[in-house]
Length: 240
Image (cartoon, rainbow, N blue to C red; front, side):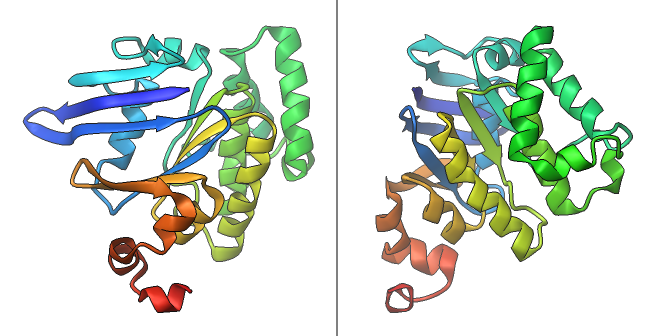
């Protein structure tokens, strides 16, 4: 579904990505992992059109996305749930959701998607008239996910969904991700929590200094000596 080839992203004189290549097949969950500053969000933002690629190709089902504005990529079914949630705190939950749906559906489709999303997140249905500012971190992340899902994505880009969450809230988010795949959504997941990311993913890529340094089956990566030492801080025997 998604093919990224030799992707370069520059911010002025700073080169954030140095020829990143990866692919995501339809129906997969693929994790992109790495430390802060590795280039994970730059990769995600280039795919969604938030930042412009300086070089390389980004293809969705064979169609080139580089050069297209973010709103056009969004209408092709590529939806990003950004790092930090970025909900509208002064709007109600319902207003947040309807605003997200407005650019993706006609009025009939908007209502259908709203009901579908509220069935998935019953907590949001109970608090439709509450403002975003009243939500806990975990609840705000659920709203951010719901806001992305209401656009009926084909490819969902999840950028650090567990960032800043308490362990229980993070677990709820990761429990939800496989259910989203079951509903037909393909997922590219950027996450610092390596163990949880690879536990829900089919495959993974390790990004360091703007370059892919390791990739493979998610379960195999969890036991890879380099990954274990660099990101999990334990020995392979302890993983076993």
